[in-house]
Length: 196
Image 1 (cartoon, one colour):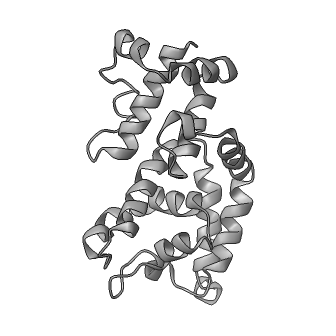
Image 2 (cartoon, one colour):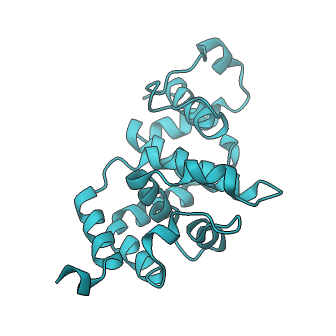
């Protein structure tokens, strides 16, 4: 991997998170960037340094980790966000289960709907009570965020932006054990008495 390739992936993921229509996974991380535009950048050193440190998959993870933290310029991106994300992904099932236990007072349908312009999952994510991966996984399974967007009561559009980021971020969660996640949800939100 070289600096130009690192820049191509960066540009694709930057568009992925900032554009309403571009999906880096659909377009296989292809964008209209040229080697000339890369060579003219003053910050190309950052891309060369990252290319030496990461392979293609880990550099994507590095960018995802920084974009979800709000770091959009390459010079602001930090390795610690990547390490924190890797830690969350390594214990994904445990963290998902812990987050779901925090939400066990609600019905699953209540978590995926909008009441009076509010959604409990997005509110908990906004407060930092649950991980972004938990909300992204639930959205990956039932696609609840997109229908909520016009219903959210959010005059500053901060929750909508966070919700859109979750929708974009869920594309990066490709190595999840869907069956295990479904079982955790079923055990947490189904009434054991109704199963008898």
